Each structure stands twice: as structure tokens, then as C-alpha cells.
Figure (cartoon, rainbow, N blue to C red):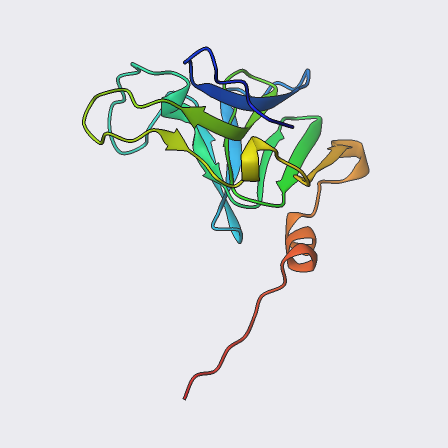
Length: 158
């Protein structure tokens, strides 16, 4: 992917969407620092009454390792090789933000968002692994995938 065309002066966000017929009921799961998963419910916060003003931005979360959907018949798991933004904006759909290039909005910090993960605005090598199984095949065993992909490191400091 790349380079991102910016000569029109408009910022860009490059996303990929995986759409299924799954009935996810506004719920998706995002990894918590690569070791566990947290349930996320679109347009909902457990701790307070959420007033939805920005339905997309308010439902994006950092994805360090993976994001998944599950319903009564199947499960879809996406694993990534670098941190990206992720969400379930629509039922049955997972979305990953792969790259962003935004101009300064003039509201205070006086700097544009120019993520430099992609050198020269040219992204190569992003790996998205997709695991899809029906319940009849058995649930996807997430832990073994993660232990194999990024094994824990034991360190002793004296």
C-alpha cells in the first residue's frame, strides 16, 4: 500500500474491512496488550452513560495483536504483525486502520498527524492472519496462537 495521495490537502485514513454475515450484536473483542482480550460493545461504556458524538472515533481501539468477532455459529479472528487501530463499526464487520496521514486541524497542538511506520508513505509487509471457524469445528483456541506467535519472555534481574 502506498504512497498516500495528499496533494489535495485532505487527510487520509487507509482501512481494511472484513465483512461477514455474523450476528455480533454490537460486540467485538480486542486484545489487551497482546495477552488477553477485552469485550467492546459499540457505543457503550460500562462506567458511564456514553453520549455518542463521533460514532467511528469513539469506537476505535488500539489493536496490538488481534481482534475477533463471535456469534452463535462461528468465530472470526484477525491477527496483525504491528499495532493498528481496530473496531467493529457495523455488526458482522471488523475494521483495521492501516495508515493515517492528517493535516493540522488548527485546534492547538500545531502539528499534523504523520505516522512514520510506513517509510516514504509506502507500507510493505503488513501481515493480517485470518482464522475463521464454525462452532461445529470447535472454537478457535486463541491462547496457543498467541503463545506461538509472540512467546512470553522470562527475565531475571538481580
